[in-house]
Length: 308
Length: 281
Image 1 (tube, rainbow over the protein chains, first blue to last red):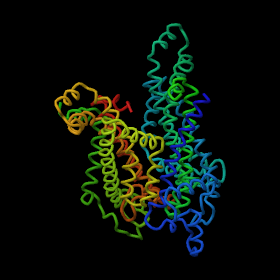
Image 2 (image 1 turned 120 degrees about the horizontal axis):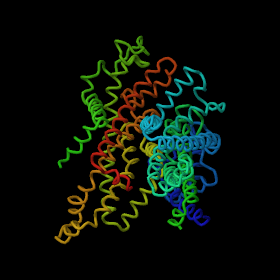
Image 3 (image 1 turned 45 degrees about the horizontal axis):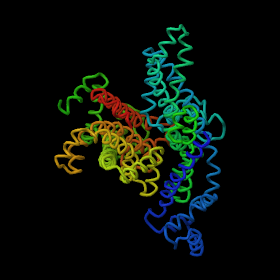
Image 4 (image 1 turned 120 degrees about the vertical axis):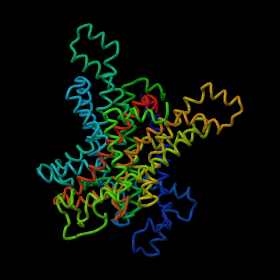
């Protein structure tokens, strides 16, 4: 297990290098002089020269990348052009909000998704199954930001149960988590339902029925346990996708967070912040995927063998 | 069996028929927008701003007094053309890359697979945002961003199909008859690999409509006054307390279109009996 963990971690290094290279290149691919994309407005020529020296802008591109990456790894992501503060400060301020939201949304998707999928499989073709299937279709086809806006209209504007926006109190988390969660629940429920129905057809389940084990016990102790493997697989594949939902939802609810920071700075062309936020989001997706893989490997020795 | 037989079977199933009818309606709205829309999409009428839905304006008016229904009908043009163009480019590029990688193998295959695996774990929205950061906001950028965001999916799918087909006897026979690599790829392998990729492309068009709307909602897609379903909702957020219809109706248009695409795609998968080939990715 430990050698699996180390190998999986080492595999992340080339991925991180490739992604950070693309993010580094943003400033150089955007039309115009890179220095103008990095420097604060109204900077004096001396300040520009100092920044150019810091990033080694007269050196070849691969050396510039090494300098930039070295700075980034020590927490120096440059200064924001519009907000005039170190990018690392902005990230430190926004990251906790995104982590809370992402973690809660993931937890909600997993728990509610497995429960809904299991109920739909156990009560196949009943109204529970049909309602779940309809919710699955809605959850995988309705744009997340629209769902968020509808929830705001109903629960915040009309009923006044939750705040419209912001992150001042815990109840401001309810609607954002629900918004990201519905997509995640749809994904998890669909896989759980299919996996349980496939497992229920296996010989050992028939055997349990023949032995006279109570049906609820078969479903919960045996069928669901088997069905959890594909659920964990799909979760580890799509964890980044659920975290990506947070980007949209933060913006809709005007919550602080990496997603809001990224969208705002993209609109303002504040490139140091764009680079910093993208780098952090990419790392979050990579670590999330790693977490999913570890859980999967802990559950299924075949996965460990494949990579070891 | 002609190419149209599975489509006919799909349309005969209840969900396939209903969704096909809705899709025909949406496409017709997009194509004939100037004839169908009751008003022009850009005529402002400030005294009539934020009018509730009623006889004159079935879906109400927006914050500039523009007729919302007309803007949604013209918006179908933006959304559909961006999504269909982006996915067509993506499918064409994915077919070529996937076929070459799957057929030739070697370092080219390893390079393509490495890039595909790299982008696979990242959500499409993040890939699109990175690309928008480089090429700047706008409708063309949105198109490029979407087509690259979905490229990995089609490359992977095509590669899997080609790998499964390239060891068939008829390929060996054709090679022995002296056929060149490109003749085999384009005349023999790709036609057999095409169906699942096209169906996956159709399903991805639904996702692309949502991605386009999301980027538009962020203010990074279509720029005003071009009507786009996502951008319309973005300007509607300022009126959420007084004119919720500005948000409700464009979202409904997206939801209905995407649900229809998914239902029809599902009926088509059933009619073609290719669920397993799509799952083999």
